[in-house]
Image (tube, rainbow, N blue to C red; front, side):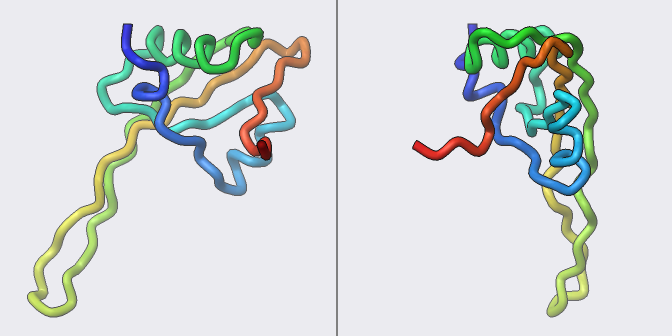
Length: 99
């Protein structure tokens, strides 16, 4: 089994993802080769006691960026995101806890 921290890289902090936290929906950036069962197992390993209802994934293509001096184009890295819905019984993940 892979290390769960190698599967789930970081939470996505945006207006839309932050608004979904109240509904028990969390968005994470995950490894590009991670599958839905691997993502589910990683969430259960990192945060024991939560019940994952569903895992949805999406691949986002990196933006095309222009180089000012050479007038050439490059691109940012492609990103894979996972949208994880927890059991509506009140499960919660503490993303912004201070230790």
